[in-house]
Image (cartoon, rainbow, N blue to C red):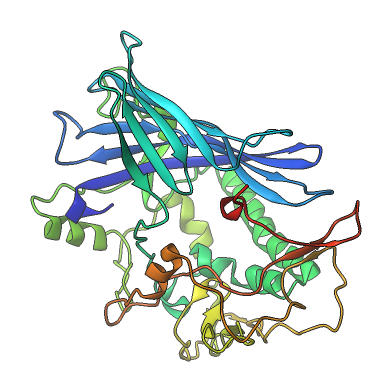
Length: 402
């Protein structure tokens, strides 16, 4: 939620994997509801959105590409308008990457009011069908990002995703797939054991911060049934500042913020009876990336750019060893089909940074907050072409110009 902009988004995303020969797809099931709180009569300018699907091409042979495909639909029940945006995948003989097309229609009459065109990774245009006038709707290359801010790992709860999956991510960063599988299996086995315990005790699982949507005919959230769950808190303050205080009261978000003491749900009592695992030593040092390029060298963890970890006081409860994260070793020759840059030399002079990355790099977070997560700017990915036996430089779809 962005109270200062009167925007709130609630969503449920349920990706489903699908393999298509030389391609893999992630089918994005679920919906999101975007509300413009300063518009509309009832629940505030409500817009129901679906997401396009994601495709990875060339997973077995040829060059690997990523694409967005199929349709994304935005529907506003209050004004009766619907926007159908098609994310066009490149054809075998023709076409281009990242192209979009679509139209905005009157849902009742079917009349087309506007047409959409352009590139989702670049400039998108809106054309008024009545007047024929075409104007720029959005330019992704110059749009300003809002970097996410998170609490340091040592302040996070054991079940928060970033901390829960830390060892797994460290192993993946080190390309140790056996260790990553073991850590992933430990988490999943514990979840299965807890689910079996709840079933044995006749307890229903209840999220700590969410509740079921109160939908159905005549319900206060009728039409939102596909969300399944929604934040269990009222955010209805009269001013943006009041809304921010309501958000901060839900759970710790900012660095140094103390968790609120709330009654524990009955379904979680058995889990709380187990000893809480606490760190008894400082968290592992951050991984150093981009060592070949001094201008891009930053202190990073597997989750992005963070500040150095602080030691945590010892406790008498259960202990756990924290997996150390040394810098990635540089091998003498490539040994994998896909090279993620561990053997690629980077020139001393960095390539020009795209506009959207300049925005992220220049962001200066407020005092007391952790640095934002930023995508790595390391060496390009190269891959062995199984047909020609040549080394191909990985090209992301959004960077392809032909």
